[in-house]
Image (cartoon, rainbow, N blue to C red; front, side, top):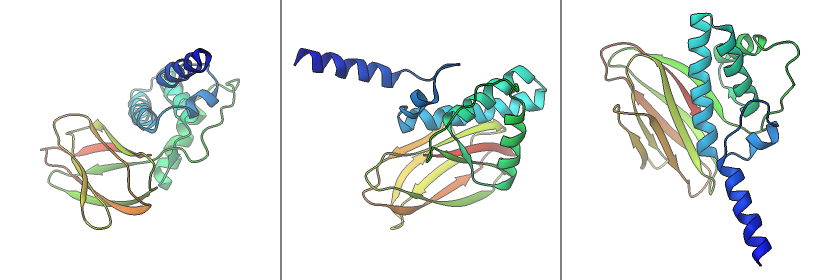
Length: 192
């Protein structure tokens, strides 16, 4: 019994630690969905800012993180950007294998006062999460509704935007993003 408890504590500690440079991609798969979505969002913003600043080292670091986390772009523009970022990795970089059904993401920009709506299907009984990270401009507001139009999450423009819930059954959700700020908001949104 004591041995089982010891192993359970070790598993819990290992699950709380995030991936670090050089660790196997298998450990990245063990991340909780909440941790993974936030890490993907942070790496996306880091990659964009590094590319804009022409910081090759930071771009390679962000690209390696994205590859290790197994993020999948949802649009052609995001796929092209990820391709550029992954091309920044050194030729001798160790190949990583990401999670087959890892987080998906997309980039977007909203003019001041603009609103956009996305639809995404989340699996029933599995923790669902949406993380939004701003690369430039004000933080938008986010509201998530299930297919019965019931609000499952709401996030204001006063801090990091993230929503986490467990759908009762697999269903399509409506995600409304509104820029109430005075400038254009450029951001990445991650679904996991």
